[in-house]
Amino acid sequence: MADLTSIVDDTVRTERGRIVGGLLRLCGSLDAAEEAFQEAALAAVQAWREEVPSNPGAWLMTAAKNRAKDARRGEWLRKRRRRFWSRTKWTRETRSTH
Image 1 (spheres, rainbow, N blue to C red):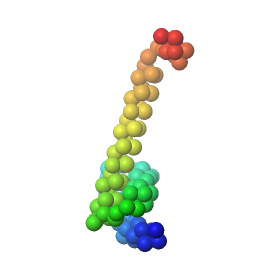
Image 2: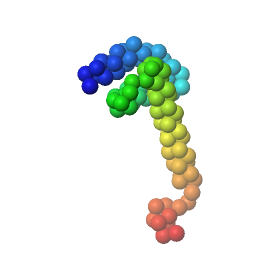
Image 3: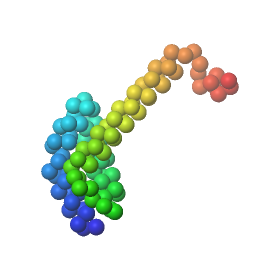
Image 4: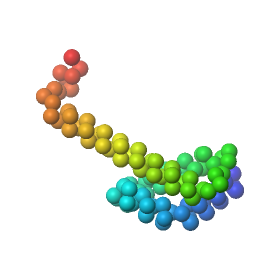
């Protein structure tokens, strides 16, 4: 486990700037890019317990991009739902009775 921790630490330290920079273009905000990177780093600790990938930096970049895309998709869906429910005349009470 100590060896895994040092591999993750080294990878995060060396790849952070490059990955967060790439995510910044994808996400549009530094907060979202950092959050996606941190989630990917946590996922690496879990996923790499059995086997460390041959290119940990590429794995981390792919995982972070996927998390950023998932977050964008979730935000897009939340906005669509809010827009839909704000345009409808139904209230919570009428939705539950129909």
